[in-house]
Structure formats: structure tokens, C-alpha cells
Image (cartoon, rainbow, N blue to C red; front, side, top):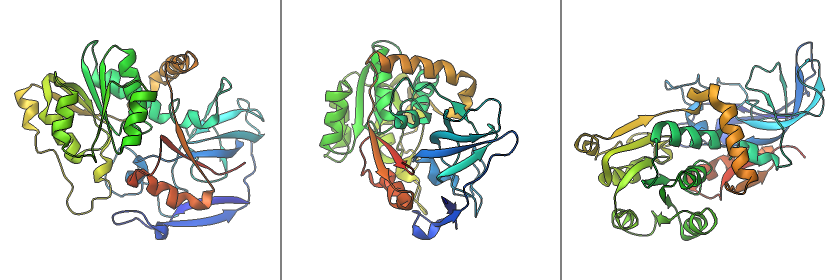
Length: 333
């Protein structure tokens, strides 16, 4: 049987178990021009909260009764499609379920895994890694010697942003929650410093870590941390807006930037983006990052939970911070 997670109702605030229907159906069969994938891993990402809202966004909302949207990776087990063979490893937008049928139009892409573990293709070599790559290089435009600050620094996107910035010759400062995550950024990923936003006076500690101010602030969280970075922005500073996870479940009082006049005074730029904007450049970015990884210049960490029935509990780890690295759910052996 194929276990699937369907959207039952749109949540108000944080998703709950009432948000989902966990159902079972027959494993789909391939018809002419399609193939069946046994999904092994599902990616859990902060964007999921926006996808189940009916607010205007860059993608249509997941419909009530529809399989929850998610990036996936798995193996082809049946095929009647000329371009996909049994045994191929395929990534794509196949949703939170154990099996999916595809004609290749849902972002399906065959992978040469280079012998790397499959979860890495949902993280550093998947959507989060590509988000980091394009957000930093295309929007942030870092220059050698500049100071780059990234929030959510130990997360799936943040850890890649910081490492790419180091490869480009920048001073890199992370912002993360807790001593363990900060130590990981500095000791394992090679950041120059990392500030614990839970540790005390964020402004004072970030200023000390950035004695020459901030040239690029890559924002994953919004809220107070964005305001603090704005207060330290240099002339001509750039702020790629990737996400605002601190505000996603904030129903009544979304906190926008209070220090936005810093953009005027410093002739700064704050720009939103989504990774889909750069689809035509995916393969080049993927090849460059895979090369860095094979050379040992790009590291990653995955937090893997097991069992599709644990989707809700695992999803909430995104918002509590109770995870270490890229969050992935294993749904099949």
C-alpha cells in the first residue's frame, strides 16, 4: 500500500495533527509515458508553511485533499517512459507519500549520485543548496574581503551560504540558536564567528563579531534578527531575503523591519528571491557544488527522522529549532 499525507484543512497559526489526513491507497501503476518512483526520502522545508496557506504566493497553494507538496528522492521501480529506466535515482516534487507516478513534468530529474548518500540531494545538492548558491551569488553579490552574515546559519540553507562565502574570500559570521550550533558553524564549517541569538545582547555581540559592519546579510528568519542586521549595514549593503521563519506561524502581529531607513541612509538593497527564478542555471550550480563537495570544500549535515506517520512531529522541528542540519524524513526502506 501507498501511505500518503493529504492536506485536510488550512491551519490557523502552527499546523497540527488536524491539518493532515494520513491515508493509504494502492501503489500506482505505470501507464504509457509514465514511471513509478519508490520514494525513499522527503525534504522538509520552511516553505511548506506558506504552501498550505491560501495567501497569494509564488506557487499555487496545496489544495484541500491533495498530497502535501515536497521535494523527494527515490528509485524508479516500474517504467513505461523512454527516458527513465528501472533502477534510476530520481529527484522531484512528488509529495509526502511512499510511491508516486510521474510523466517527468513534476521537476523529475535523474541523478548520478557520485556514491553520495541520497539525503544530500535534498539538502546541500538540492533545493536548499541551490537557494543558498543563487541567493548569495546572484542577489548578495559578495566581494572578496567583505563581511557576510547569515541567519539560520546551522540550517540547510545557512550552512551552505556561509561556506560559499568563505570560498569567495569573505569574512563570514553566522547567527544560530545555541552554543552547539554556533560551535558547529565555526569548528566544522569554517565560519569566522557565530553569534548565539539566544545568548544575550544580540546587537552587542553581532557588532563585536562584525567590527567593519555588514556588507551582505542573508536573511532566513526575519523579525528582530533582521532589524539588528539592518542597524549594522554598511554603505551599499545587500540583503537577500530568503525567508522569515520567525514569522511564518505568527497569525496576528507579523513583525516587519523597523530599521528599514538604514537602507535609505546607506543606499542599501533588500531583495526577495526564490530558487525557481534560476531554474535555467540549476545544472551549472549543481555541478559546481558537487565539485566543491568532492574536493572536501563543501560540507553538510542531515537530520533524518523516520516514518511517514511522523510527518507532523518532524515538520514542527523546523519551527522549534530542534534539529541539526537539513531536515529529512525517511518514508521507505
